[in-house]
Amino acid sequence: MKLYQRDEIQAVVGIDDEALRQVEAGFIALGRGEAVQPAILSMVMEEFNSEVDVKTAHIKGWERYAIKVSSGAFDNPKHGLPSLNGLMMLFSARTGQVEAVLFDEGYLTMVRTAMAGAIAAKYLSREDSRRVAVLGAGEQAQRQVEALRLVRNIDIVDVWARRSEGAEDYADRMRSRGFTVSMHDSVHSACDQADIIITATSAREPLLFAHDLPDGVHVTAMGSDSPDKRELDESVLIHAGAFVCDCRAQSEHNGELKVFTQEKREPPFVVLELGRVIDRGERLRTSEADITVCDLTGTGVQDTAIASFALSRLAGR
Amino acid sequence: MKLYQRDEIQAVVGIDDEALRQVEAGFIALGRGEAVQPAILSMVMEEFNSEVDVKTAHIKGWERYAIKVSSGAFDNPKHGLPSLNGLMMLFSARTGQVEAVLFDEGYLTMVRTAMAGAIAAKYLSREDSRRVAVLGAGEQAQRQVEALRLVRNIDIVDVWARRSEGAEDYADRMRSRGFTVSMHDSVHSACDQADIIITATSAREPLLFAHDLPDGVHVTAMGSDSPDKRELDESVLIHAGAFVCDCRAQSEHNGELKVFTQEKREPPFVVLELGRVIDRGERLRTSEADITVCDLTGTGVQDTAIASFALSRLAGR
Image 1: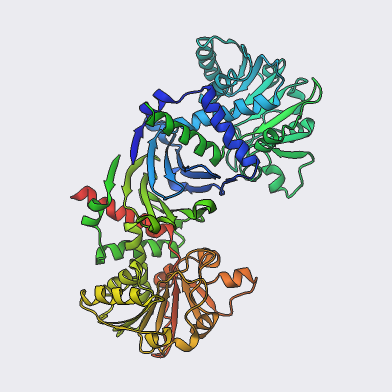
Image 2: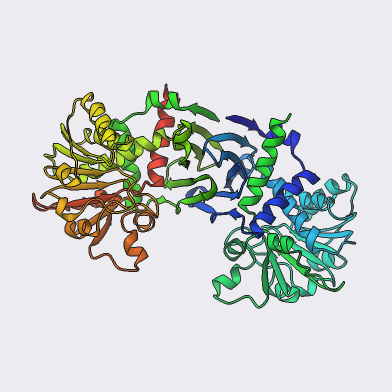
């Protein structure tokens, strides 16, 4: 059994084509029904303002599966600690033995989440997409855009964030990575010329509406991952006509479909899963003006894919 | 963050009064509604004949919670490996940081499961219980009896097992621990004079019936812990009149109540949870002839209790 620390993992796994292929293989297995992915185990500790999630999935035929524990302690920033933490364990599906523990502190979650956005854009956005609007200024707001470069020739970024200092800091970071960046004081203005919109906020009320969407845009919503978060107004979903998500059950519980679950309504649009769209080669974009939407809640297959990939690189050093 | 191996853990945690008190504190917290205990995360890997379960619970006010991963790989014995494996992680409820990983390979599960049986007997069996009938000859068949000695003056063991070689080996082991042991070729004969009956098998069909129960006996059923296992015939539950379990939701899904869940029937007896029985001081035994039954499926509070206890002993060495 091997133990690896974050710095060792960071040295060998990043946002690159091979990681993308691994995560995509996970989505395709899920789409084909060739993965077993239990519901997320979730526990809230109210008196500590903290929570923990456990995700896992087994991809049929794969020798290893990951179990990921993600903890969130939301008073940590007051004490100079990061809010998010966690680790991934790799088990042999054949013998049940622990093969490795990756003390990645959330690093691999960051990578596989960015990859999911890139995969969504690869299959849903216009091929000539160059300009990205980003709502939010945190780590995923950055990593999503970096990962998009694996699949589209992105060079212009329009950013909006609730706190203008956050947007300024973000703009500096992205300019140093070679992007042309504009800051905006409204969501509408940020999205006005976008080919791709990324929502990467912790919003609890919708912040993107149908009237913010330019023709032909693709939207990836990755902020909402718990029962109390929401980024997209229903009008966005209706305008798109088809709604793609990483995992329907999770989207209904934690993601952008939960308004329909809570109100016991059938969504007035087609609901598709990303892995199935990829596997079946479905074309959701039939004209230059079509709008596509993908809601990402984060799946166990991504964790098993990225952890297996990380271990193969770590072991191969 | 600390890592501990099985031998270190075994050296400081065993079947003793202090471990019993810790596990009992977990049950009482659960009974008082002072614990958060999510449903078990469970995943089956059919092509490898293997499975994995994740359990956790937070006891309100406790600084740490455990997440336990238990893996079962049922082809392992063919290759000289144990079927069961696993580890426990302790997290700070306050900061979400991993404080320790206990690579106990299932050892602490063995201890806390034996403790639960002793706690059930402490509150449900007759105080003068001396004679135990054990169905099954595996590790828990042994550990349950050893743990009973913490709460009752047990000196006679009657064993029945499907394989007679298993029973013989079991009898040798228990004699060397000071018990008077008789082997039986039927469940009925084994139970005939029992004060306490322990079922510790992997039976898929009921093997204990009402007509096997002597007056005044207490039954602890700890074998059934998955949707396809079952040890007690419905007649046992009806005969007892009250049914105690460690966690009702788990008993309905994995334990002896699942026949009622599957057939969508209300159980024709009172269903109680062990922690609540202890907390409220409920007396289920009103005459010497009363029958009591407790179904144990294994709970996250037991894992958090035993892992916290183990860490306190390991850190205090």
